[in-house]
Length: 477
Image 1 (spheres, rainbow, N blue to C red):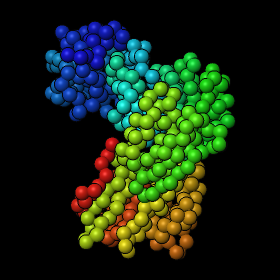
Image 2 (image 1 turned 90 degrees about the vertical axis):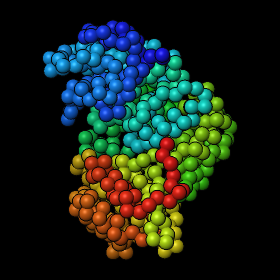
Image 3 (image 1 turned 135 degrees about the vertical axis):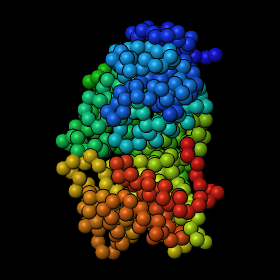
Image 4 (image 1 turned 30 degrees about the vertical axis):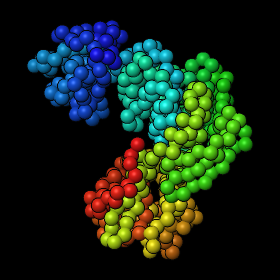
C-alpha cells in the first residue's frame, strides 16, 4: 500500500494526539464528507457556513479511516469509534501538513494568480506538463485560505510538477499562501478590474496580486504579462522582493515568450509562439485570444522547467474549455441545433469582454442569432454602474444584436444600448431562464455569463434539460 501520509508523521507534524488505534497511513485527505473515499483522512474544518465536525459521522460512513478534529469538539463526537487525531485548530493543522508536504517535495512548483485566467492556466499547465512527469494540481478552483493548503497537503512525495492557483479578493490573502507554496515560478496572468468593490483602484489590485512575488524560491522566476500596463510596476515589485529573474509573456516585441501571431475561430485557434528563440506553430482546442495568452504562460513554464516542449505543444490541441468557463454544448432544437457557450462560472469586465469576443467569432447556423445572455458582475462597488454600462461598447463592436439580461446592475447596460439592439431585461435569473428557454430558435448561438452569485448555471441547466445534446458536444477537461 502506498500512503500519502504516514499517520505517525502526520500527528507529529500537526502537533496532535491520538484517540484510538489509527491506521498506519492514509491514502488521501478530504474535507468533504460526501466525496471522501475509503482509506482517506477527513479533516473537520469549521467554515463560515458549515462545521465539518457536524459531518464526521457521514465521513466515517463513507469510508474515512481517520478523522482530524479539534479538542473543543471532541466531547460531541464521543460515540464515534473511528481513530482520530485531535488538534487545537483543524485548519491550522492542515496548514502545518501543507508546509511539511512542501518541505519533503522535490517537485518544480509554479503558482498562478491574476485577475482572470487562473483556473484555465492551471488546467493548461496540468496538461502540458503531464507528458514530462507526474503533475499535482487542484481538482477545482481551490485557491483560497483552505483550498491552497488542502492542495499542498495532498501533494504526493514523488510529484515532479506542482501547479497551484492562488486567488484573492482582499489584500494580504495571497501572502501567507505563497509562503506555504514557495514556488520556483510565480505567474501573474494580468491585472484587471475584478473584486473592484473591495479596492480603491486597480493600483491596489496590482499591489495585492504582487504578493505572489514574496514567496518565490531563491533563483526562482517571476513570469509577468508584458502587454499589461502594470508590467513595469510588477517587475519593480519582483526585484524589491529579491526576485532577480523576471521574464515575460505576451505579444510585446520584448516578451520572452512571445505570441507572434494568432488565428482564431469559434472552435479553437492557431498561434505562432516564440519560445527559446524558436517559433512553434501551436493548435489550441479552445477558442479565444485570452486562451492563447494563457497558452503562452503554459509553454513558458514548460520551457523553464525543462519539460518536453513538443509534447507540451501537442497537448494544447487537446485542451477544451471547462464547465462554466467556455464549455460548449450543441443541443437539438427542432430540425436544427442550438450552440450554448457556458461562461456561467464568474464574470468581471475583462472576462466579459473575452467572452463577447468568443461569441462574435462563433457563427450561427442559417437564420440563427448571436445572443449574449448576461448577468450582474458583482463586487464592483462604486464602479458598478460604469463597468456595466461600458459593456455596450464591446457588444456593439462585435455586432451582437440580441442581449438578454438579468439582475439590478445590468439595468445600466440595458439603458446604454441603442434601440438597434434587441434587449430583454428580467429582474431575476429564474425569469430570464424561462424567457431564454421559450425564445431560442434553431441556429442560435448563446453565450451565458454572469458572476457566480447570480446563479446563471441554472440557465445553462434549463437549456440542457429542455433540448437534447447532439453527439458532437465538447467534452470537459
